[in-house]
Image 1 (cartoon, rainbow, N blue to C red):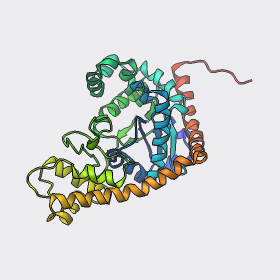
Image 2 (image 1 turned 45 degrees about the vertical axis):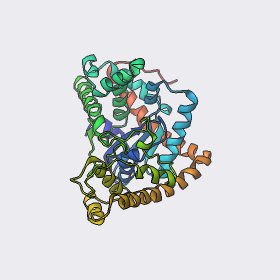
Image 3 (image 1 turned 180 degrees about the horizontal axis):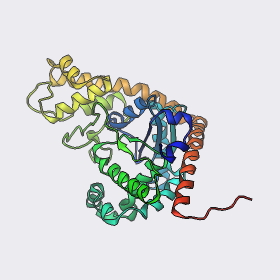
Image 4 (image 1 turned 90 degrees about the vertical axis):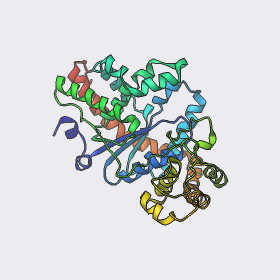
Length: 344
């Protein structure tokens, strides 16, 4: 057992540690819900979970300050509404724990420029946003590595687009451990048993994204029933007319949405709706999605009005996160040779 694990409390020794985060760049979509949030909720009983709203990562977009504050609080409340339990998980704002940025600077000095330059996401975002290729975007994976290594995460549940970043975090952790003796837990990607990836309703070849200029391509977690019905009714399918996993990507996408919201597998959806027309299947999917969202939206509306409760959740989680983050940084600073201040 390495030093990081020995420094944690007895409960954490009994459970593997999971870390994951979401950026507050706007209201979440059902793609976020099916692909990540549902999995986060399910992992709470099995693992020691550290979840954060990654507001520092969002700075790479150079957002308006008022918007970032509003999005951050809205995303925090929405995740609680979906079932994240601040008594069961440590759920905090990334910027509230300054050790994230401290460790990121240290790891910058143990990550190679060529490694960071090869990150696919950096290349993709640089191409799409050529007017804002900032250094923060380049160093994004190193801050992400700090997020993970700070809490001794054994597993990181991420989508396919983030897998390369976790591999990068592993490389940095192993390099540091080799040079200074075991310090960081080397993380692994946690792959969910069933894929929750949801694609665009208008272009099902692409991932659902709230940044899509076509508002009909995504369903927000706050969309009302009429909006959900309208968007799913307009969803791209194909000309085959069969509810089948062998059909086009559009109908496959609707099958996966239905399966995720029913907490079942796609094969069961096909078995149940195999004889339906596209029109009636879309109507059923819209009803299922809207019904589930309605309960979440009720919770969300209540939580957004209860600022005292939101602050109490943050404070409770901050204490737990801060304790472990400080332990990690004390160890890191000692090993790299920084002089500690003497206590009076």
